[in-house]
Image (cartoon, rainbow, N blue to C red; front, side, top):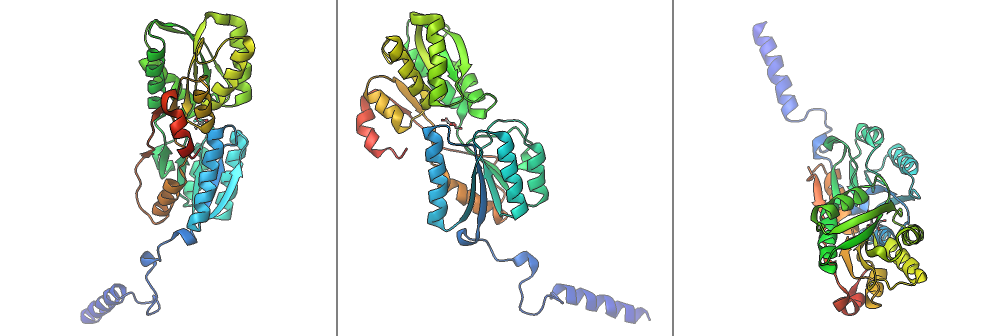
Length: 324
Ligand code: AHR
């Protein structure tokens, strides 16, 4: 009897080892075929089309998908968090392989990201970060916004060695780039420069102009400098400054962020003094990370993008090579 039960145990162990019941030649579950770009289905919840930067970013996400043969489901949330959450939920329901999104603001994402995690769908944050626990996302691909703010502060110090009063056009309230560019700028700004007002222009040209008009109405030619969290707001402000009868880039020194083509044109015209680069061409890196995530690879918490600073002196030479 004891011999018989030993035999049964031995046979069970043998069949488990050789994969009994797997149907002969079929691969075992853990040897499932790897995904490729051609089999990858990605849902991408974009913020909107608020700036030249965002237009370039969207183009990069769409064009790269086409080049690689990735199936892309794309949505534009028109700068509204509830629209982004609805888009992410629809991608979960459709069972995409990976979800990418640029969180319009930093907070309020736990519930929907937990739903994606429960559905086994990796989420990649692109461009902007959300303030969520590490286990809710596969990786974050984007810029060091604090460093961009620090660079902008240093540039303002160089432009205003005598110091003076400046104003600030902040990006979308509660967004990672607005929060971090605000903090980074203050880390490096010299003591003799005073920020006399700081208001949001929501990263758009129209609101940048509107807020700058209000600054000029309140402080007039007391203002010697402007720090804009993106080029679009700076370009709107340039118009307001000219309409007020002052010379942008001369009477009011201007430092902004992004380095889009419009900023290069403004530098060539002598109306913008410096632009700090924020790279929107994230498509190729995004799909590479998406494929790695879906194939089960552990990804780093943050994949930073490389960036530079540009000045009027070589703007004309560089403009033809700019891709955004
Ligand atoms: O998140 C990146 C920021 O969003 C860009 O600096 C700005 O132009 C955009 O709208």
